[in-house]
Length: 435
Image (cartoon, rainbow, N blue to C red; front, top):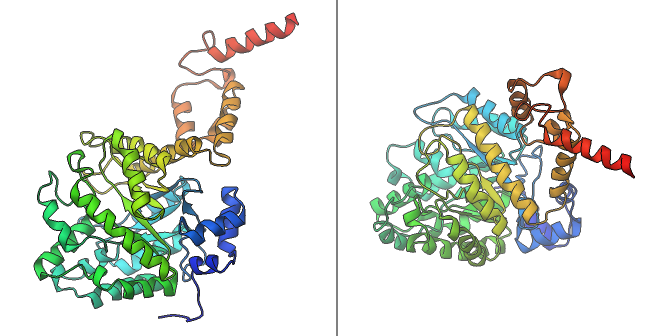
């Protein structure tokens, strides 16, 4: 299993030790090392850092840190281009994604995962049941030993956090039959099918302690998956969603007791006016564990633009206390995302996260915006590009707008004669001359 003397970030924080990873997080977040250690010890912050993945840049995911962004990539049985997925992982990280999840279900999964772990340079997440189900004809043929073998294999390969749908209980399934959209989580539907076809309780729940042993041995952070997240607004806040959420609370406490870092995943599709309530309820139910949300999408009717519906909900969720946003791309509900989808998804999620960091008063968040204001007023175009969340796109838009190099103190929207900032500079100069 591993070195018996090895201790996780959580165990070391509880003993009063400040690890190198905690120091790096403190520096990046402009927080004191003592605060970071205290938050990790309390379970309000996690630092996914598998001991088999020492080269990954450590990030703190928690309410005291800036809001993080995850990008999902991965092959499918219909489209399998491993090199393309590596390129998407690198692009996501270059655009500022803090973690990457490999959700591959097609091709040589171990080789694809190993390449992503090596290439990304950030913490990597997975959903182990995907690999387990991809290797068999019927999910019910898997027993817990099969599932645990995949978890341990992925842990040894350097995966830093894993989504496990352990809180989805057999007793929750009746409530899903009254839903509009049913079960929309792929992992959730696999576990539901396993339980129904075998007539047994969720094996990740019944064998949870064994799962925790593997996670502790490698310091794999556990992400309790929301297998019953709402897949449309009509299902938001229903009995199924909240039943699973309440079950997560027990599993959070058991993970912490075992020395395993843990966060919980959340919705899904939620109307704007319910986002804050859902986040606050989740934080209470999960005893303050970091909350990781997919979206939430605030409307169901924007296929092709769900990076926007997600960014709206994500900003509200992060402002209310969510610690990490999983990006949603324009391809959500439609197909496997391409590179341009990845770009749009990451940037939209980063906009939401940054807006929330400003609202939450996170250290350094507003300084970047102040600098942008100064750069715009001073027609410092290179400064504006450098400060933007997507410099390449900013440069391209400026270039394609037809702006001329010989008169850079304006843009092509107003032109040189009606440019507000040029006129303001003239007004300011006149005012100084009168003094």
